[in-house]
Length: 209
Ligand code: NI
Image (cartoon, rainbow, N blue to C red; front, side, top):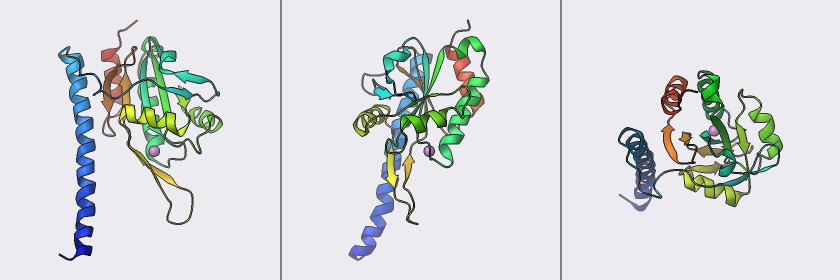
């Protein structure tokens, strides 16, 4: 193998390894989630996705995780100009919320956090979240603040330049996190989970009122 072909070989290997690493993070998150409610064990501190945040909502108001105290949260990361995955996932989250009774619905805060602070201003977020009923809270913020939240949730997001000279897009992980009323991680939904799966989980976790 000459130097060039060795390099060409290494690129896919590195990508595969990075992917396996990411998948394992998610898998361990799932394992903990199942342990947490089926065996009453608690994951070691620092291993669960989540954490505190201080961001700005679609009305320009400062919002922290404490503003949702006492409520379950469905948290999704994405960006408003995403052409396909984000709208599909947010629609799925909305569909799940529309499948549960009003009593449980009142116990849940759907939250959409942008990974694209340059374009997703509060005004842009407001227009976007209003497309979904019930509308999620749309959160944006400074790059630094959003990076902290992404790291806490183990979210992957990276800018990709459009080769046709157009605007950039972002590659990002697409998971819906279910957090408890105390902001602790409960479960994660992957793109394979359907709205009915999310609704079933919410019915199981949240007591009927
Ligand atoms: Ni997206």
